[in-house]
Each structure stands twice: as structure tokens, then as C-alpha cells.
Length: 604
Image 1 (cartoon, helix red, strand yellow):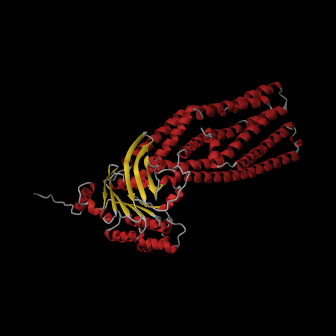
Image 2: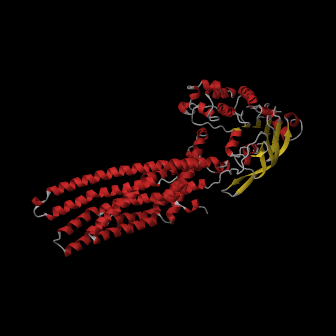
Image 3: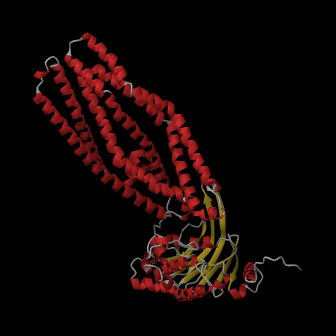
């Protein structure tokens, strides 16, 4: 087990985030100093009581200068405490935001290096909650909870130093009440049951977050069919499950919490009889009377920081669980980098006896989707992948840029195994237009420019023209500066897909993978896009995945897949005339044009 596994909780948090010990130590010292200053007014109150009781019979002999000096001392302590607390919070906030930045950057970079298998096997809601809510709680803990805990602990310690310096018996009574109440709360909130509840709390939160994302995405279906939230059964069940957990949690903690509050609030109940017992032995001791009055006033005051300490301490359990969930992501192994990097000199793609299976870690199962796939896609030619749904076409394309690694066999570019090409270099070699388009919530210009951040505006516009999306962009309110999603600006499926094609054109990578790139285009724009793509693919290796067979008639090579295996290989002219899977697909495709809806039942 490596070193990163030996540390847990806060130690592990600072380890994965980048330690900011100096700022946190400074925040702790300043917070402790603030606690000491905040006790100065109470010590001044004791001085006033002592002075008044010493001259109880003759108040005109009370030294007013002493009272004024004590008043100014109390004021100075209060101001000093507030100033030190402000400085402590500033230091802790700087440390917190630096740690927050380090965590998010590290987590984002790590997720970017993981295979798509992790993202497809983990709910988006769970990842979103970890990156947002869990990390935000860590920021809150460091910025507020740590200085508050130091302040509270220092307050309690300094108070008991004062208590024991005044009277050991009365201080011992207060300390006993607090220790017993803390032990009750520790057993209540820090035991095995509390750990299980905290883990369950995070589980239910992640499940609700994932279900909420799905529910929002499915809202059109819910509205069309006139159903309430209950129609989305999973979301409803997650909400009900969270309610049951919350009620069970409250019932479990109720008895311990009641005992804690009763005992902690009973300090005066114990101080009064002990004080009477002490005063009975020295009835005329005004100094002891002043101490007793001070304990009666300040004894209940110690309960406030102890309350705060308990609630702050409960937050550490959430932080421990949050760190464990961060580690759950960080422990995922990224796609391994090669130790002997090579750069291909040509861009032919060759699959050699490739087999691939999807892993389901939760069910501990493997599903083989590709078996013994072998074909060559020459540079400067179009290779089309066709086949029935679920035959493995998209999986074949996704293996080229190493979204996953093959189980058996190899994939090479220009004779170099893709596993021996550095990831960054491999990403620069491949442009990928997905069937499911994705646009950032940003301007259309930036959505296209992401294909090549260093491109000039003229190059971005040229790419948009080539993808046949310049005209509709110019008609938008702010043209290329129009932000997607703002002011009700949304694109149709065909428009969004053309923007993604423009992104790929701008990147100008030597290998181009098109996964149903013209799926949402109308006939006119499909023709225009094919013209643009025809110009784009010169001297490039092109892989096209298509269900619309008319778009790949001119392909140099068609690879037909069925149930994860290659069924046929050839050109459209060859495959459409010989019996087989492709001929069946072609006949079904052409028959679809003759199919029509009718409200009248035809009679023979």
C-alpha cells in the first residue's frame, strides 16, 4: 500500500490538495489569540465584582479609577479579539481557496486522463456532486470550521485555566459536566453508526443528484404525457429514500442529543450546591463570594463554545467521507502513458485481431462487443463502418483515439501502436465528430475555435463556411458572439451538428472520424456538408459511421459489422449486389422511402 493510502481525513485532504501549512498555522495562532482577547472582558467583569464586594458596606470607597481602567481593558480586549479573528479568517480563506483551486484542477485533470469507461459507468450527478458540493464543503471547513474550532478550543482551555486559578472545586464541577456531555456526543456522532449514517447521507445525495439530472433531461417526455414527478419513478423513489433516512437519523440521535443538552445546561445546578458548601465554611470571605458569583455567571457561558465545538466536530465526519469520495475518483487508473513514445510518419489506420469488452464494475461482469476485428483504413481514403444497431460501429471508432484500450490485438497509426503514441499527440492526430453533439455554454465563435485555440477569426469563419453554418450564425442576434442558451437562443440538431463539423474542420487533423455527422441535416444541407467534407478529407484518413447509407455510397471501402464481428468488406457496388448483411441493410433503407402513413385501412 502506497503512502497516499496510509493517510486519511484531514491529513489526506491536505496531501491531495497541496498543503498550505503556513497560512493554516497562522490562522490557528491568530484565532487562539482572538479567543484569549475575547476573555479579557470577562476577566474585567470579575475584577469589577471583586472591587464591589470588597466595599459592599461602603460603596463610596469603591475606586472609580480601577473600574474605568477595567472598562477600557474590556473594550480593548474586545477590539483586539475582533481584529485578530478577522485576520485569522482572512488567512484561512486564502488557504481554503488555494486548496479549493488545487483540488478542482487536480480532479479535472485526472478525470480528463481516465478512459470513457469510467464516465459511462459513473453517473454524471455523482461526479458533479463530488466536484461541486463535496469540494465546496471542504472549502467551508477550511475557511470557517478550522479557525472556529481553534477559537472554541482555545476559549474553553483559557476559561478553565482561569477557573482553576480561581477555585479548583468549582472548576472541577464545570469540567466534569462538560467532559461527560462531550463523551456522550462523541459516542453519538463519531461511532460506527455515525460513520454508516454519513456514508448513507452522501450516497442518497449522489443518487438524488443523478436522478435530478435525468429528470430534468426527461422533462419534455414528462410534460408531453402530462405526468407529475411521480411519473419519474426513480427520482421520486430517491426523494422518498432520503426522507426515510433523515427521519431514521433524527430518531437515532434524539436520545443522545437530549441527554447532552440537559447535562450541559445543568452546570449551574451543580455549581450552586458546591458553592453553598464552600461558603458555609467561610461565610465572611468576600473573595470566595466574588469567585462563586463569577462561576454562576460564567459557568453557563462555557456551554456556548462547547455547543459550537460539537457541531463543528460533526462536520469533520462529512469531510472524511467527502475525502474518501474524492479518493474514489483519484484511485481510478488513467489510460497508461507509453514509456517509449513514437510519432507516426503516415496516417494509415490498421486494426489487427482486435477484441474489446465493456466492464461493469458494479455487477462484476464483462460484455464482449468486438471480436477479432481486422481491417485497414488507408490514408486519403474514406472507410465507412455500417451495420445494425449495437453491432459495435461507434466502439470501433472510439478505440482509435484510445477512449478505451483494446483487450486483445492492436490498433496502429502509420505502423505505430496507438498505445505507444503520447496521449496529447494522439489527440492532435484525430478529429472526432460525435453523433451526440455537445456545445459549450459559450459563444458560437468559441465553440468553433475550441478545435484550434490559436486560429484567427478568418480561419474560424472559413471553417464555418465550409461546414455550411456561416449563414445561420450571421442571422443570430450577435452573430458569432451569440451565446448558446442565452436569451432563448438554441440551435436545432442539424445546426448544432454543423457547428461541431466546423470545429473538426478548423482542427484540420490528419485523421477524421465522423459518427453520423450528417444525421440531422436536411437534404439540401446534407449535400452542402458532403461537398465541404469532400474538400476536407483530401490526404486524410476518414472513418465514417453511418446509418443513412446514401451518405457512404462513394466510400472507398465499406466495413460491415454484425454482432461485433466483420461480416463483409468491399465497395457499395460490390456489397449491394451480393447477398449478405449490407444488401439487407440497403434494401431496408431503399424500402423506407416507399413507406407511408395512412389513416385508412387498405383492403385487398
